[in-house]
Image (cartoon, rainbow, N blue to C red; front, side, top):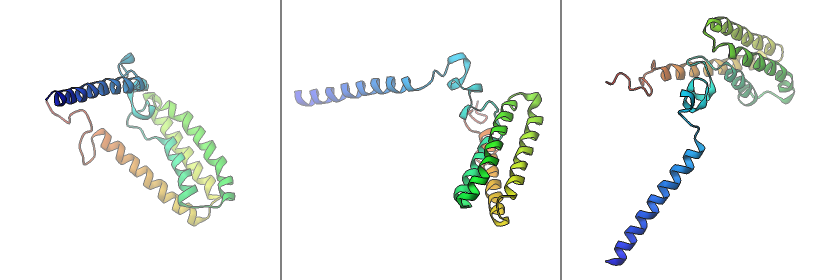
Length: 171
């Protein structure tokens, strides 16, 4: 009986110590969620550090288009070398314009400018890619943009699964 009690006590002590160590180890890795009223010390408390809730991540579209060109369209190395400056310039310009999206008064203008930059990417790529490669890349890019928009809609509560977080009208 004493051995059984000792064994149960030892397991309880180990479990409590494990919980204590786990809690302190993970809290050391988490940012202070209450700092300055922001969640996770990110601008606006949003995921991915984006300060524009509900806005399309245009930089991601440019990066994903490059990934699609490299791996899904499977163009040769020479074509990738020619396309890289087009993507690099577009990514840099889009990143600068994305900062303006956080300001409500310039949001519409910045969005139009970003969309114009994305169109310039397509014009630049038409000179480099074959018609078939360009068509496949356009399909993949459109598919990614649609998926991104659907994810944003679901996150905001407009999707089939209802609201995320927030309780969805519970009182």
